[in-house]
Image 1 (cartoon, rainbow, N blue to C red):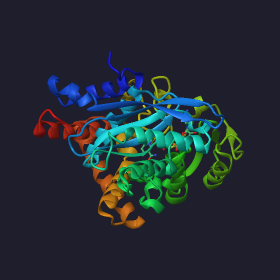
Image 2: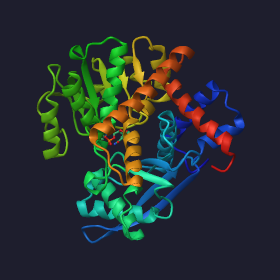
Image 3: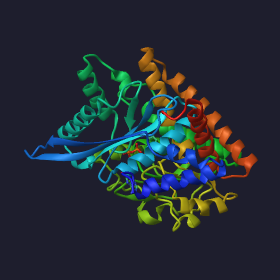
Image 4: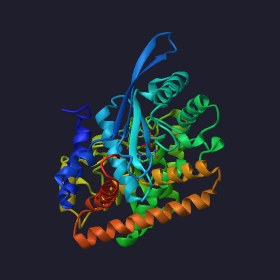
Length: 420
Ligand code: NAD
């Protein structure tokens, strides 16, 4: 029993052990690759609008410090736990290593439902969380970014709290902040754009004509909405399904994704969006399409529905959407289902976060074209390495992607010794 005990941490460990066996990693090295270097839990008392004081639990997990500072998003979600945070931090480590970024993985967040907080309450939670984290984070120690339930505004509040403490603007303490206070051009769109870049590469390999393809996207937040917009208006793919936590909408004639975006901006979610049939969210992922993009929560592709997916390309934009049991089923369908595994598929976010951090440290800003070109170059390199490794070793894309990441971290740990 450890403080990380949780279903999703177990899932991350199980995935790692598959790779450890494949790479024949010595048993003496396994635990230090799995367990986080540091984990911080904090209690955040906050004055609520109704005059009460509510306490929230906050977490930050820094997985390893072997290659540089840790880097990872901040999740505001009702059931967030230390174990979930640790699993997400571990995945960030393999993701950063796969993209060759000089980072270890981290993740953090607050167990709260941001949709039930007023703006004042959200600001108070954000300031208080960063205040409690000041001793543990820093531009050369641990750099935060956004994740589910947080956005540019929350990053601005984090940066403000850290900067007020130090007495000057430290914008390199967070990434994903607004451009007006040192954020980078192209960060908000980076994860979704990266997803679509990789989908296009998969379509090339499979000789699929985008104009004849259909897509279903689960999740219509930062990642899902940008992915759906890029698929529809950049790649020319017909988006026939979109969903969020409130509704799943299907229209085989194609959905006007821009109208959906405007609707969500005005109403907050897709509940009342009327351009299609409202379908059962549990059956949404198994509807026929060419490209399926889970871009919401973890563990949505399970042993129950993996055999029923009817897509040709599964682009894992969310972190951990596929359980290890489902993976075994997907591996058997390798010739009909092309998987772009999460640590590759959604790496665009952390890659552009890295660019934002570098720009902040150098106080030298790049244009959006420079950012996007460099993003695609790194994704292309990672994608090619994964495809090559999977082909030559006859292994699944996920095994190949994770193996490349784990190998790099292990090699660095061997070179440095036991400390990091
Ligand atoms: P977000 O909070 O902006 O949006 C999440 C979306 O998912 C919302 O539309 C929400 O309504 C929807 N959702 C929540 N539960 C759902 C459910 N059960 N079924 C269907 N939809 C549901 O979050 P985001 O930043 O877009 O992140 C989405 C996923 O992408 C997460 O897994 C996150 O870890 C991952 N990710 C995000 C980034 C990033 O840069 N934001 C980078 C890498 C990975």
